[in-house]
Image (tube, rainbow, N blue to C red; front, side, top):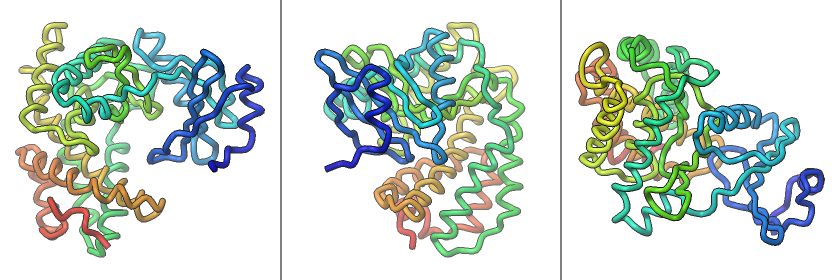
Length: 335
């Protein structure tokens, strides 16, 4: 029987849900936990994001901003941020990932809706969030050397690693395609299909780490998915759908200043490098070995990004520092 956290019943009584039936849901990669509530014909979701490991305030702030700009974050019914409790709207069970596992024929409609939702988000003024700057990008890629290289028991040139990433990320940081809200974890497991159909409005979750950054970043999250195979040709088609939609709205992603496709590849390499480190950390530090099985998929995506000319400095570093048997299809076989 699942042990419920201390303070849960007190919070629910204060929120007017003291008589609710409580159904724990499976955990994710964080310390957050979720519970589905039912009280008669009412339903809600309870999030527990306990300090000091978690802080629900950014979630509440971003949810408020999204709702104020006509984007579909869950409504907040009641919250006690200091204790880590948030009572929110239940978006149901139609998660995009699960829907497509059962109905692969709906893939194009679901991804088109997700791409159009990003175009809507990028039409809005950027939120009052911190910038996705060089220090943030570099701090993320360092997770690779801190965790993956360490777990693989290999010595690497850390100074060269940072220098290579600074070189390839400089055009991204200075790109005219910056200046939109970046949700940072926008993929098929964090998109809810409201209304029970693939083209339905997109319900957004797991957005508490939002920053202001490059328009390609959330496309990378969606189309280079660490947890779900997305055919490269299909991903290219959806990337083009996004560019066409932004063009229709008066934003040129085809010519002029900034190499949007090159910057997309650079952000893909940056994100995938970070994820290899994060998944290793989840396995080694947090006792969640299931994430190791996803690393080969991420390596495959990373290798494809590194083929792009803009990534040559980083590609040369990988060639010099990471043995072939620890890359690609064998990338999950670490100590």
